[in-house]
Length: 146
Picture 1 (cartoon, rainbow, N blue to C red):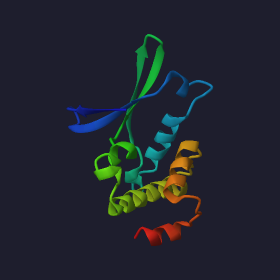
Picture 2 (picture 1 turned 30 degrees about the horizontal axis):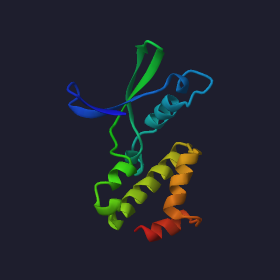
Picture 3 (picture 1 turned 90 degrees about the horizontal axis):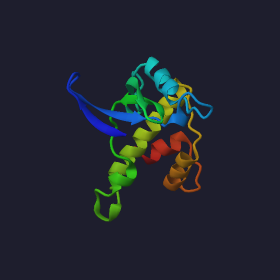
Picture 4 (picture 1 turned 180 degrees about the horizontal axis):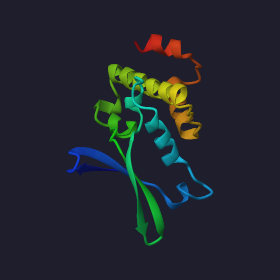
């Protein structure tokens, strides 16, 4: 991803260039289709603002083939980079609570409104780091983070 200022719309956007294999091939990730689906549902749900939003798309013809490029709203740094802003790379608890709350709102929106689930191993690993081996219900999490 790279950040760019778009003078025509006077806003910052992020540009995500998909690999050749991830669009229109047998290994298609369907990312464009998923983002289009999310966009059609609107933003009335409280978790919609915490989900990547598709603004536009275009195709780039490169020397090795065509790449689908997604123009999306910028979201912020990943947690690895964000943690480095704090002493000993420890995010303060109030900020962790806010981040986890926003993450849960985004997951609620994706699951309940969009019918989308994420089954990637990386995200399961991140959640296991956050919550250890405990299995908590959404109401339990809301109790701990409100």
